[in-house]
Length: 214
Image 1 (cartoon, rainbow, N blue to C red):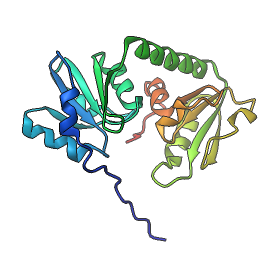
Image 2: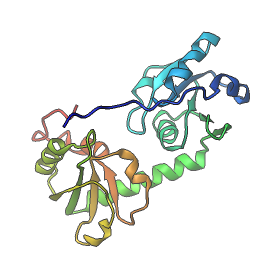
Image 3: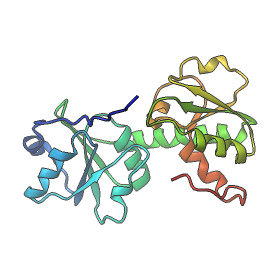
């Protein structure tokens, strides 16, 4: 069966007009998601600095940029919250859907950081873990999961699934390692969960952990 990927992009979001709501005193650069990126790039004609696309797990577009703040143009807080956490700089949000201009607060960053550290601590102390592998096209990282299972030094089980409901039914699993969409951990499944990217760094110093994840 042939699989065809069709990019979903928003057109005529009126981003140029919405920029009148932006009030940022710091020197800033703009980031966005793929849905709005084409229209956002048009802002370069008005002198704005557009860095490109970011994800909740990837802010490489901002590396080496000498700015004091960032403006995220898009929906939701997952992507800009991670950017605020990793960059330690003010991050503002212009949402084309709600037409609101807001800022990620220090309290939100602190809560995000505490949650992330808390989940990592659960992982450190876990003897038995479950590794979530999605069967969905584009999210299936089975090879990566198998390598992680072999070298993580814990009793690990791989769970192949197309959704992550009912994880609490596996009561002997002390922590879950997610290899699917990183936004899964935004939902409250009432179980400890970390993204594989966050815990890979723990093991990369181990000589046995010598392989590429890219």
